[in-house]
Length: 244
Image (cartoon, rainbow, N blue to C red; front, side, top):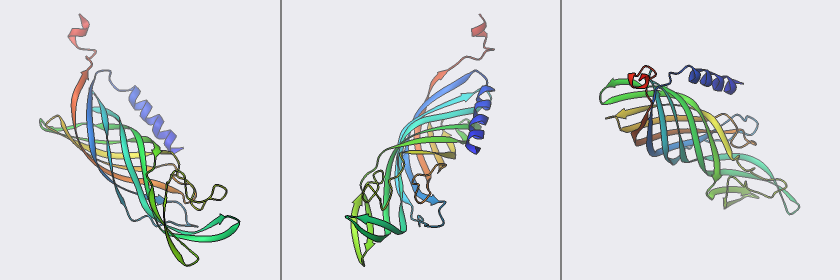
């Protein structure tokens, strides 16, 4: 419900924006720190250990006459985390057993599209600051093989697994697979230096569950640097050139 209200507010704001705008295209790349937060209390997971990832992609910024901005782009993002999972039922070959997972690594690759509203504060000719908030949608198209530790029958077993596929047999998985889609909220600030160079800091938090069994949601801090240039300037309705 809150997500629907936020989307409606964004649409109302966009409809009230002036027509004239500048369109700026850029590239950004950087590193991130990610982990998972959980809503589960019955079978909690310890996800305090953050994993280092990265992101890279294209940005498109629309700046309107009143300095309001619509910001988007397309990014490749690697994120994940390290989990400590509690006791799990695991049935295999007709044998029922309980296993514990003291260290489960998760590495996920996403294509991510943010849609954000910002405001451009022109500090001086060489520096602008753009705080922004919005939503993002990401699709997990691939997950690299990750490490997994499993304790069962008093033995520690090291194994590899793919988070999108889960771990265990198909009828009763020990760890169910992660969801492909990740939808969440984002907030951040972008500094523009010398009109072309950018430094961006963003925080993304998932609104849907990345993994249903443990109620896991993505939590990611991103730091990126980039370069952007003016792609197009639309004329103002009051521009004398358009009234001839």
